[in-house]
Image (cartoon, rainbow, N blue to C red; front, side):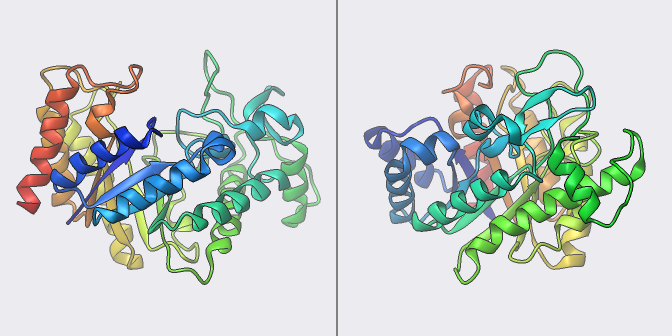
Length: 331
């Protein structure tokens, strides 16, 4: 059993070394470092140092395209979507939204560049975090589905259709958008061909994000190079029992992994856990293990105390619970 923890928001090596010591001492095996577009511009050498420090402690280091293009999960703005407006997604209401379109050539160019730079930092693994169409970041109110930009119209025609993009609600759109995400991922991951880096593909929980084109797990599982499949069924803001919610999604992932031969990873919520409810973390871990997970990971280090918007109510207690779950398996 492997145990991972995500790490972000710290680029000062003095603090990072201490944090990585704590992670290693707690029995974790993997650290997932965020590597955003901001990092790609300003912190490449700093992230490289983090990877080196991680691996020097016997920990596996993964890099996460955190918020890159607005196509991957993460609380990071996309420089591409902010500066190249012609590559942004257009929703069904005709509005330009702050995320790049998976079919826009500039998006693939960015992902290929991100991959090339990431590989130069010598990680053990790339963690493709929640690929999706626009989910509503920086927007109040309900999310209108998309995308209906010129790049999507061109891709639709290239796929063999003589008619324009069909209206929203047409079942063909869901498959088209999933195929668009798959092509984007395939193009980015192809940049790593010939390297020994591993690839984890993390799915949004199936059925929870209608319109994001993220539910086609079987389609994405065929992407060459991906050796580990993952999902992150965070129960926050849902009237569910955490163990049941995690167990349901982990079971579905396990069935797919047994069919495809991929390793199976389940992420456990370490954000917005109310004070006094830390036992839900243990229950979720138990559910993931029972479903057959090869790897358990938590978002994020020290219960996300460095980001108040996502921090747990009692970060110290939540972090202690996470460490206790690791110790129960690794001794």
